[in-house]
Length: 149
Image (cartoon, rainbow, N blue to C red; front, side, top):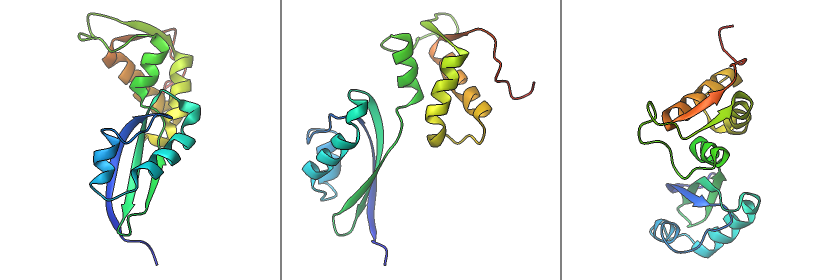
């Protein structure tokens, strides 16, 4: 018989750096989860993405056990890493903060495809390009991944 779910917690934690301090401790403590056990498991699973902000969805059961799903880093974080800037532009239509290539956009779309609500790679590329545009990042070159060629 399936376990009865007590709650679902969504957090963004730096990979390999989960500890009982906020936001992890209070969120899990309120549901009665063993915080240190979660931290050990999360850090072990995300040690290859150390320092990157990683979304995690924690399912807490009535018996205080838990499961969690680790997602890929958000598109905005990946774009900021590529352009080597701290944050997006306050005025993306006027002030540009950096540029990337269509090949880099495709790589991000391929990595993030499992977490996106896109059925084709072309639509995932379009979503990543839109995020880049709204952050003030220009995309160099010609888009060879257009949906309507």
